[in-house]
Length: 322
Image (cartoon, rainbow, N blue to C red; front, side):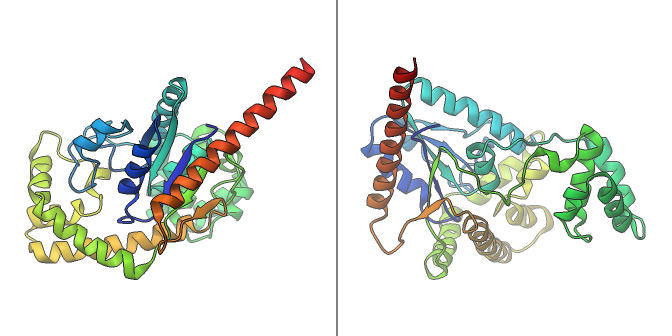
């Protein structure tokens, strides 16, 4: 993945538009979406997918991969992203990964070893956790089976305890053996640039975005998706804005109330994204008060120059020792 660049940041930061500006100025750039909801076909307005014109102008990947009634996991995204990046590299092009789904990005740039799912095991553990004192019992079991994993979670964090036990029991391997976890930030071949969260900039953008989405037909989009055979999957129903519009359509929540809740939840989500990304010391933050396209272009070109230098040094080394 030498020479590839990722652009991250909170929702409504203008990442897609900025990426398109760069791709137009750099031949051979292909955009790879890193958004957990843009993978769903038909969820176009609410996810602010790139327009058909933009997608015709610059190749985009990892959009519209599955139907809205399907579940989509980080493991599937990792596999799909690997195939997309391999194709870009085979064409001699460079990828610009763009999005705000932090776990999906880490799965790709850090090549995380992701444990599988074991639904039957998880269901049994959830039933145990529902019993009085069940979480304490499960935590004690985790401590016995995988003390390293137990040391990484609090004794009251039901979700993480259940997940660690699910993997440990289902795979036959300690959960902690799947890697150091998301707390580690190893060197990566992908250069990452970020747009920082600034409340006075992003909050008004979020409010304006939802007003624009409604004008663009967001309510009608959700109505059509909900009425289609299969409807929306559990994951798709939780997407920002979609959950609130569904409450309006299915439960009679007034539209104004639903939209206000969507704005509130999106603002909170942007802050969680910022908390996630700012922990990563590898991200080079752009100055939101400066010329963002110029800054991204500089970061993109520097990554290419560094990759080219590394490749050249490797070639020289092979000649000397060949």
